[in-house]
Image (spheres, protein in one colour):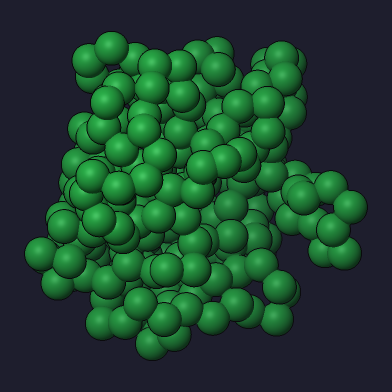
Length: 241
Ligand code: MG
């Protein structure tokens, strides 16, 4: 899982380097898929979930502006001032890594910059609770406290998850919850914590492509995610370089 996580982080770094006005989300997807396959791994999201009527058709999720999660890469051209969430999953030697970041494209508004900073801070706060002896609710509560204290909203429809041989495993990791409640965390657990923040509403809707989730009010959204391992002391963040 360290190896898979490191690959995810390297792909995100590669994509960040290529981000600029004029680039299409489809170019980013092809770049990621090529890199992943060249390194002997497979993109976790392509064709997920197996057997579905409309499995995810690309290697990464690329969600622009009001798109919260599961944006499908394609011909969309990025513009100065956009924000884009890149969500990358890699399977290597049978184990998955999964992480997301929302990046600015060129110079963005103060509103966008603040949203990105608070979402990153919410992830950091959640991660800080991922220690043996803490409970799942401590993670949820920490994420919720950071986001809501700054006036942002959190979707209840999507959440973090356990990860390992499967991309999505138990437990579900909500972004809202009560401290001191839920599953007791123990050394060796591998988790994805992923705050998804909205402005002015927690409501979302799914586009006709049956994947892309957007804010109901059209406002900007952000999503940061890491895969981590619970170890003694500070958690080991597997998807950070
Ligand atoms: Mg995830």
